[in-house]
Amino acid sequence: MAPHVLVADDDAWILRMVATVLEKRGYSVETAVDGEDALVRALARTPDLLITDVMMPKMDGWSLVRQLRSHGELAMLPVIFLTALSSEDDRIRGFRLGADDYVTKPFRFEELDLRVAKTLRRTQAVVQETREQLGGSSLRGDLSHVGLSSLLVLIEMERKTGLLQLRAPNGPSGQILVREGKVVHARLDDTEEPVDAECVYYLLTWGAGEFEFTACLVEGADRVANSTTHLLMEGARLMDEQAEHAELVQTVVTVPPVDSPDDSW
Image 1 (cartoon, rainbow, N blue to C red):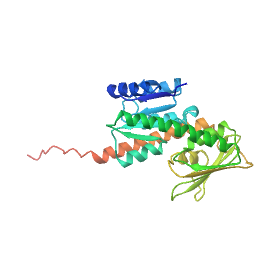
Image 2: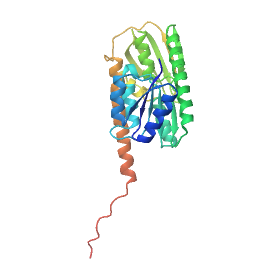
Image 3: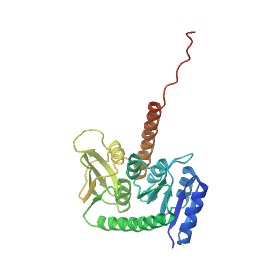
Image 4: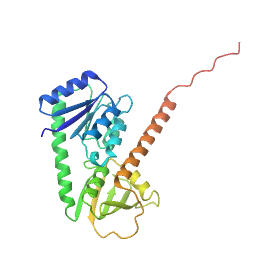
């Protein structure tokens, strides 16, 4: 069966051209005119790949991907951002959300075609390798290749019990205990807070670093008391709130103050 690709962009011409190119290559293509439309379509029919613009009405690409990552069946969905934004901060933000590639407008459609094929091959290989390694007693890898949301979903699907250790580049490290696939405790190594669910929400923001899962006996009470799906959805909501706050602060800082009328005369 041909891979099913969902393309989201508010530019009708780009939407039509991307769909035409991919359909000629044999892909099944579905299009969405904004982020909300794409979210509804992805939940109705799980795509094998999402290609999305960043700046869209109703829901932007950042929020769309965060929302999709919060659903277990979509946590491992490969994503290509298609955008006119080209700053390094935008690229970092995209990859922190688990984006697999980042194509800057304007682009050559032949290039996009190659990126799509490469992303689908790489994602299938990484997920398959991760699942095979989870069948053993240990697993290690890079968070930039397999995000924490994807790891937690795979661990839940495989009903694994053990310790998941994470280490940020030149930064903090943390631990997540899982029992029968469910997160029961989480903490950072050098600080007392955040802990448990709040710690998971913090760790979900890491877009890079190393992880290692070791199967072992996990005893003690369930201190999280939430499903993986709930943790991912709440983590996505909190990241949306933080992003909206950051954008509001930036707007306040960059907009010059309005001069008050001079009534001295």
